[in-house]
Image (cartoon, rainbow, N blue to C red; front, side, top):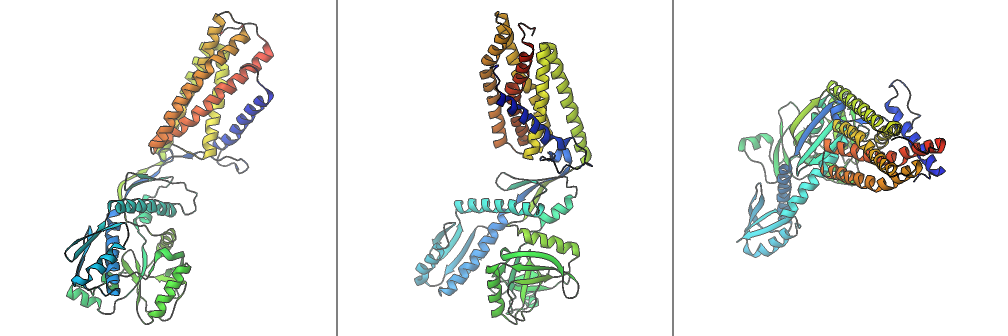
Length: 517
């Protein structure tokens, strides 16, 4: 074990040097250029840097209702296309139901309903049919909705991909959002509070809005919508979506011909074809631009339009910038309900960092005093290796750009004691070998040979615990697991390689026949 080849010495020196280089950005002042260094500063978590914490619930029930309403319209069109006479088409919270008028059309009606897909189940009672979600269909819809919501949230909060927010799924329908360094939770809520669902639908000319309000009903296949502007107008809009926001290729804040703030948009190839077809076939009809269930504007189609357009309304410049951002990010598939909101000031984070630094320093001093008092010169070598271990932990966190939280600092403090634990095992084995009358070099060699398996076993056990904490934990638990896992890996390296290298260099230089440990 004391035969330390040259390549091993160079490897240890290279790893230690890389550790210093990657850890440097964390100790160099902010006013100094750090661009020449390969590493970056450690990302501080919400509890250390301050910021905003939001716990959201994805309103999957709203998606379910919307899907059933769309399903009802699809059934209405398919039955009319196949000339199946029906009545009493109703959409409830759970089902779409209808009654087939002619018994001879029941076979064709059932065939149409079965072709809706595996996400739905069809039941019948005489000539009355009901369509509902299957359990599998509901589960898949919930999973897709939450996953899509997380992706849209990430695009809205971090459009450039540089802010590194923490966005995690919790449970079936909840999403945790943590934004370190963001001290304006109201702006965050505005960004997340807008579904930003953009659709283009035709205005129904069969009935005016005032007549629909007076009669308290709309023509079949249409709905009454309010204006998004402060003019108090309403429109009768066909439910069928002609072009949706999913076909958007881009959106930018701009100004219209009257120098009013507006949002210009472009459509992808499929959207441009669809937009051109609809506008070409409906020249002279009002075409409503609908955002989050309200009519932004309803201009009359003057000519066929392809590929691009403009959204105008009572917007401010800030509102058009925000609207362009959320449209580029995409529409949320479901509304987000804020269940919990917290703002953490940077002062609290600074206090946590100071407390963590004091705890780490006290822990380091106590460990150093104990090791030197118990093992003398060898204890001092273990303390030097511990310093290398701390540098490597900081370097690893910087290189991986892992987020350091207060529990993470606790993990670092814990690994300080664990880092010298391996050395304690080796030194105690060396003492036993010396008490058995072996020479100094033989005792050192035997101590390392007999302790190495115990060191590996104990560290692997703790490493597995850290791995399971990371897999099954969330938030602060993961932060603790990351620093603990990195600390275990670096402590094994420093105990088995660095401390042993120091001892080998001392033995090669002094050639001791005996020593006191």
